[in-house]
Image (cartoon, rainbow, N blue to C red; front, side, top):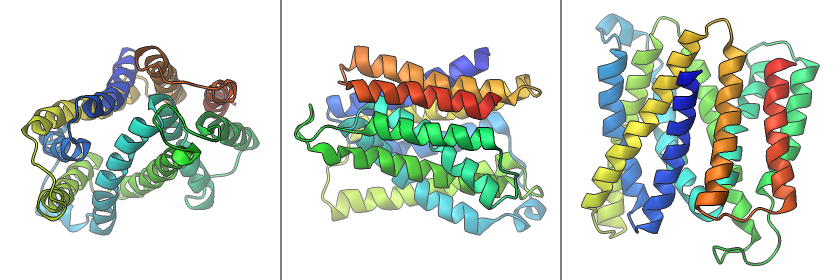
Length: 287
């Protein structure tokens, strides 16, 4: 469970870094760009993927390319959601995006629907609607109630990304670590193209500080993945424990940090939504 704890802490730290970056007026888009070189180097160094012409001949480059385009865009949306909707709502939306992949498992991957898991999804849908709901009028960010759109984008975006990664994993001729490296390499290329547009097209100022912030972000982002993978290896017979610990842990720690460190305001309905989110994860894992 120590690996699960480390993964939870690293996951929430990513959100905290993006939140603090705005406070210190560092361009989060550029931070996200510089996260990818770190992800590539860490994947190469820690996971040691197999890289041979035979392996690469069978690689699903169409899926790699799709993920390479989606990942930087979803990451930018994550930063915007954390800024405007807050860490609590964003973490709930990101964690409950598992419902998208769970439904896809029934519809696309041939898994048999289970009534208990479907009930968990139903509870989770109510939970996410309650947790991201906003009263009409201005909030503490000076924006109107349509801010809930940011967590909705995160919910569907990360759900789609998870489905694509599951499809990548089905290509058993290519080791998953190799696929991860290819996705990060291509995503880094897309991110640098966007950075070039950001600087030259949109006339944004290049930020040296963003390089440092991006390296730190990339380190924690990769550590989250690494510890999560090691948690599954350490508990091969108890995947539900890892699944539950990760998702409930991130929701709970994100809520504590959002409320007490950043003074995010939650309504009574929002709090009910967070509780329902936790219940839904437990139902999916154990019923």
